[in-house]
Length: 230
Image (cartoon, rainbow, N blue to C red; front, side, top):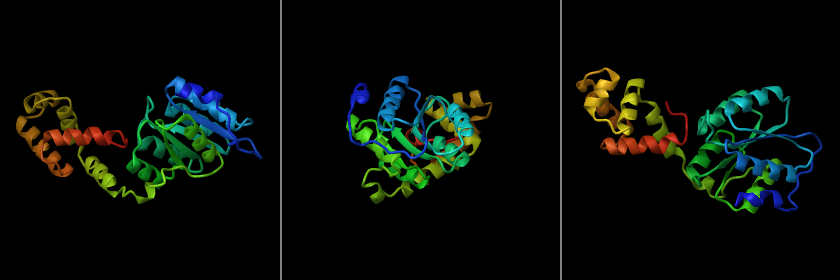
């Protein structure tokens, strides 16, 4: 559906009094090109730059003096999830960020909002909706689902905190569990005893507050999409 982005016509055009630097950070070239074309149609005089990695983005932000806006996909080749946002925010706290995500996730929106992100737009939205969201972001508005403020993000934060509380050894065991390895194989691969593996598994289940190995693996797979996981 994104092919038609370059053909859209709208009155949602941003008026500029100064040069605006707009970075489109997306590792899928087709979508990146479509978003860049959309941005150029909205803000004809903007300096639009496209990147596919966090590293490239950081270098560009270092070179730009001011007034940078970042339209960001959370799944990059060298970074993913909330960690991508925090790395940009830590280095360039004044940069405004609009996240384009493949998922309609209200809890993730809630957390990103608390991290200073200016907006969140699911890629599942229609082309006109995506375009208007980008235009609103470039006008200086915040762009979130209206019901995000009604969502309690504390549960997700607590679950992420529990996962991050695992020691490095416990995380290695959990990842081995996620790969389908049994205790004997985990012990062999990690160079530890089966008794130690069993101890780590018990600790992992306790810390994650889950009942069994399957639930622990599901929790890992669910939370990894948010980033900031060991």
